[in-house]
Length: 495
Image 1 (cartoon, helix red, strand yellow):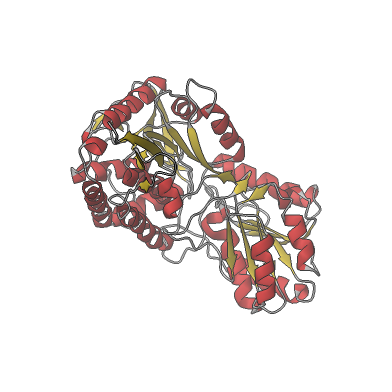
Image 2 (image 1 turned 90 degrees about the vertical axis):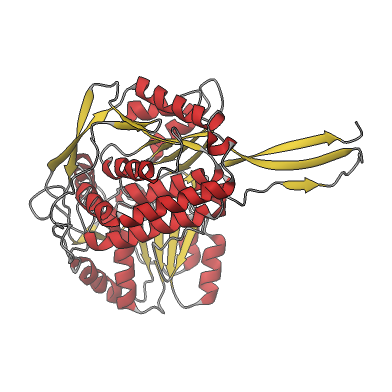
């Protein structure tokens, strides 16, 4: 396989996948799909309309209420279908890795790890499919009643995905929902639809999933709105910006039925470097925590606190680590950081860099502008001596921009400032001092805290945040349980 060309897709990307078939959408609009490395068009896909969403949701609704997926399939059969899907993904992983690299601009060297995680997710959650359990509850006051609960799937789930990890975040959402017995309508990020379409192709190829269990619609905000507001959708799962997430949550309560939602939103995650660390190793960890995926991570480490006693020694090491990142063609195995996703994000990040320089009066340690002279590339950028209340230090940028804050003396002061943040998704601390670790992990209010590492996630550990970082959890049993509802049965055995 040519590592420098986009694979030929075995389906017509102008079609969508609904009710087990590839169909031409009703919507007549189309959208170009770009390679962010060069800003060149690599595919053209359709833009769906509300009628397309309606057909997809009705297919998922019929599959849930009348089809075999939940009404005839045992948990073991759903498990085996998911394992067959994982095997199919594994057989085609090289193709998926290339599609992601071209469509998202991801370094090809990062993709084996992402595909390993994707496979692990489907195989991990497949293990839950035959373990859906309720409870028998002994009669407390009336011995003539037999009482128990059963867990049932919530129903039709509408997913709206982000652009930054198309296949990984798809797995985060789809795997636990399928294991629970739900049916799905999935809308990928409009910039990155190709791996979702390829996933639908592989699911269809297994022959294990009844029509309507998984459906794909394409488009932007109008399509997402139609999905969120559809009366036959029982739950909404969303990953994206805070503003859109708030709109999604409001929309789930503004239609005929109130629906549940799980929203994974933004972050402005802090890291704390204490005096007792290996400075060079920690500088590399910090840069990786911020710049991974070109900084397009909701949990990116973008606010850095460095203890005053090591500040002057640590900053040059941070500069070296950032400048050592290799930028270049994503399909080159040596590339370590790719481009931003599109022109809008490119302009947004450059505008924040301007704000940092001109309005926030932060000092540019390295970077601070475009890179490579093509596509949507921005240099890894580090600001120093940044006021903790500066815009570049408090607003989510979603790019390779790190704000090193003014040096600190007391970790209690850091914790007090960070506890007032609008975001509460993640944080990190770098130290060997167990009392500092205990204090930080106990007092910080956020969903995930890394200690002497950053960015590693696992299928069996829940991930999510508080406040403007959203609610609900991806991954872990908590994610699976989020696609189940409890039904109580009271049986009068005296009759």
